[in-house]
Length: 308
Image (cartoon, rainbow, N blue to C red; front, top):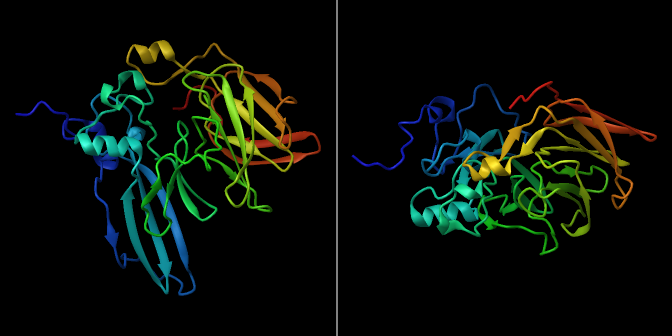
């Protein structure tokens, strides 16, 4: 019998987490009820789907980006899905095996992929300036054709203007201007305390980028953008470099650390950034936010301990 890794021997990859590993073109999905004849448009989704059985233990979210779209027209809906051709996906396809180690830990990768982007593009699809982007917060966007789902750029840097190694999975699009605001933590590399803030116009030009420092290095999964302010919540999900070198995953919860909320002016250069200290808390996604004068209100999920 082969000693190669297999999905069959790993309970995590059964049931709802079972890999699909198939690219689908389905004309006329079965529909319960009736689709309104006037409904026309496309719904995109993206998620992790393992290309090969992992070479080391990891988490379900570490699969390759697999994008799907439901296209509605004239009372019908068609479905198309494609693996996203990231640098990581293409390297593994050429080797016909998994080459990357545990979650966001390059110290556990096969030496053959040194210098290859680890980005999986498996978290969020965003449409902007005529392109569909598949996003993962540890790497720049991956650009896709919104009609065919073909990967058109596996390391999109807005014409070479992006001065960060990372870009959020949750950028915000201004409903009034059509511009997009994004950020990237660990922007200068593994465990750097640099966070970049990026302002992109409606045509895809990166107009301005500002870099700030955080109180400690860890996961900043989402942020808040109002008409006047930008805010970041830094939680004790720290970047654990010693743990990574020992073979563990990128993050570890440190219950001894406080939470910090940083607020800066949206049109500023970051020098006005103020940090507000709070108790140990865990939060991931912003649900809503607004500014009232100089006060900022943010709705987020919140836990007293690590909810991951």
